[in-house]
Amino acid sequence: MSHTAEMVSTFNNFYEISSVEVGQHFYWQLGSFQVHAQVLITSWIVIAILLSLAVLATRNLQTIPMGGQNFVEYVLEFIRDLTRTQIGEEEYRPWVPFIGTMFLFIFVSNWSGALFPWRVFELPNGELAAPTNDINTTVALALLTSVAYFYAGLHKKGLSYFGKYIQPTPVLLPINILEDFTKPLSLSFRLFGNILADELVVAVLISLVPLVVPIPMMFLGLFTSAIQALIFATLAAAYIGESMEGHH
Amino acid sequence: MENGTYFIISSNFWTIAGSFGLNTNLLETNLINLGVVLGLLVYFGKGVLSNLLNNRKLTILNTIQDAEERYKEATDKLNQARTRLQQAKQKADDIRINGLSQMEKEKQDLINAADEDSKRLEDSKNATIRFEKQRAIEQVRQQVSRLALERALETLKSRLNSELHLRMIDYHIGLLRAMESTIE
Image (cartoon, rainbow over all chains, first blue to last red; front, side, top):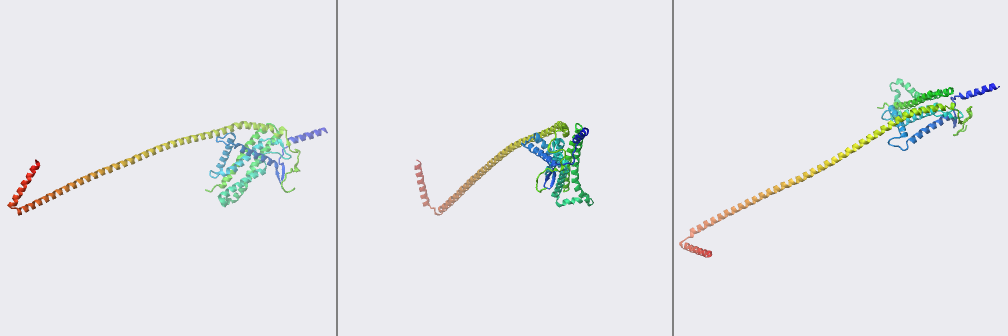
């Protein structure tokens, strides 16, 4: 009797240590929709970080930048360079805020997911992690990018924007139409897959060997998530630039 | 399920983990690894980042200093050019004033010379006129006196006889006597 009790309790303990919750979400009810509350909570935290960084670093602006102001100016120059390279010298200015927001949101959410001790806070269901590990977030970002480059093309060329579908030859019309669907698809799945996969690998490694072994994987995760943020922003800028070009 | 917006925690998915709370199991929450990762990140990243930011600040500082130096040089040159412009303008004014006064002087000189010339010509004209007038008067006088003498001679020739001649000689002797008495 006691043996089976021991076995059951160790089995329980074993089960508790090696629990990896995938696909479990913490739901809130909004009207007739269920939302993933853990994603909303972490998104809000990321937004709060970004806003406080912006507000705190731009108080008391000096001509010779110090500390925080220097840092955010550096980030702004980086984003501006990125946008200018992709969109071109004449019309990149209005798009810097959009690309900057994409880049910063994805970057901060990826790194916050990898660096914050989210597991300290237990939820009834699911766990806190990077907001971009949810397909809904990445699809939202990708759809925003789609809307952005459609708007860019239509704003610049009017209805003749749709002439680009038959551009090199009309034979490529189905491929061009397909491109409009694959662009947001690839953007969203690339980001989602990278972040979720990295999280899963780290989680599995932790559940297997909690101490030193996950560390290289965590560094790799930091690196690839930063690259993914850069890629998302660059591709978004490239799509916008591509839809605005050819006017001269 | 009512319409409208309200939050409830759906109770369809309760698991063993239970409710909200803090997980204090170090191994499970990965705190040690996170600590190591964050430590290494800060350690290496701080150096790189502060280097980058410092370089940026120095570049900005240098650029601003260069710009200010060039601004100062430019204002200096502008001031120098301005003073030179002033001097040149002054000199131009001087030359203009001198030229004007010189012009005036020469004009006056010419006018004076012309005046003198005209006066001289006037004088000589007047002198010539007077001279000619005198000559004319002289000629007329001579003519008149000649004519008078001729007439007198004619009258004398026509009416002279011994009696008249005698009377005239007596008259002249009387005149001479009167003159002699006056002289004495």
